[in-house]
Image 1 (tube, rainbow, N blue to C red):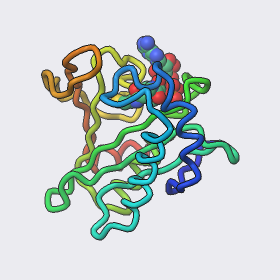
Image 2 (cartoon, rainbow, N blue to C red):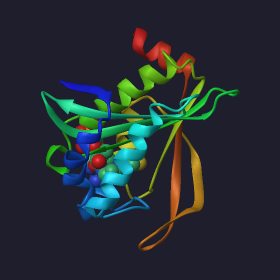
Image 3 (cartoon, helix red, strand yellow):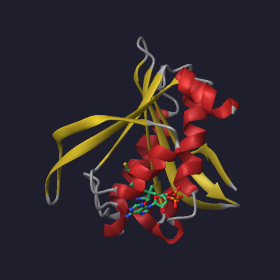
Length: 174
Ligand SMILES: CC(C)(COP(=O)(O)OP(=O)(O)OC[C@H]1O[C@@H](n2cnc3c(N)ncnc32)[C@H](O)[C@@H]1OP(=O)(O)O)[C@@H](O)C(=O)NCCC(=O)NCCS
């Protein structure tokens, strides 16, 4: 079972086991990370938990006591109750439902505790695994932003998916 808990400073070592891998960051604007970059990422994510108002919620995903991934929920606009989710999983566990479990929990926190109205996520058009996760989460494809990120291999388009609070409530009550 996958559980989420707020990221802790000591988690940087587990995070680095995937953040240093080219396959884990292939479609991302960062990485592969040096140790210093992973420490800085985790330190900033930990620091965000004490900001008021809090806009960034970074969780370590654990199976038993092992940190196997990270899920992030960002409040993009508090007035308009807009949020964004993202996730990453250690490649040794890909294909076992871990990202889907992380995503479900992020949506529950975003729509539940945070009272958001719309939550979106983006992925590289080549990232079929992530697009599949977003579909399994009940998100709807909205369209494609063109060249909104510069990756190591050039400009990246982003597929945009979203889910609204009533859609999420209907899905979990079924
Ligand atoms: C994308 C990622 C998070 C998926 O994690 P995961 O734990 O393997 O995801 P899940 O097991 O919950 O679901 C993956 C689904 O995609 C499918 N999938 C994986 N690769 C695929 C591919 N190349 N083509 C089509 N489907 C694919 C799997 O079969 C599975 O679907 P299924 O349950 O219907 O069989 C993981 O690959 C990852 O961490 N990648 C690097 C970071 C990243 O891209 N994050 C997302 C940013 S948008």
